[in-house]
Length: 278
Image (cartoon, rainbow, N blue to C red):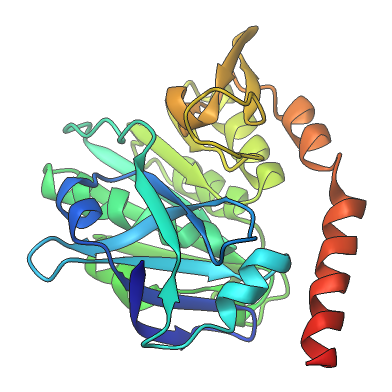
């Protein structure tokens, strides 16, 4: 079992926790993830490692409570345990000196953007981080992203913080201002990543996206995380989670993500009812 060392809410639905996981902390690299179960009867869910300390033996997870499992995880406290955790999984981000790297994090996607920004800056890149959210409360980890970046730009859909607009507006402004961008890495809602990729494709800016699809075993056996990239089938768990954003079939991925929405809602409603009954 993995003991929760720290737990705090960053917004009403988003929380972070430090979890004891010494072997994972030693081996993890930027861009990798874990799969955990909250309890014996729980489903397996993938979560990106937002930070880690190999010496202290912990990893940090940042989670949005949107389904039955993430809600159950949100109710855990420091000192509680997570029954099992597998990782690190997935291919690490390829880190090299590109020049100027624009990190785009949308909502909960800011968390997995953090270790990549750290690694890119350590490799000698100029890192510009664009953090976006529907509102101010969904712009998370600002202090950590500032520490990992040379420049931070914040956008919110409703204008409650930073500049009103979308992350694509911020990218366009950088391009229009003559900033040379050598690489864009976008992590967040699929629709956001789709439109970031469409924009950067117009300017031939290499773009990587980190995909968070339906995932069960994390070893490529179940096929639940299958996506189409450049007319080829890829498994996010073993071939990714990062792919060339200009080649990803986002429309197909978005459609597949919506296939189980009704069942997910039913599961969450059932979990909430059990909680109330107790």
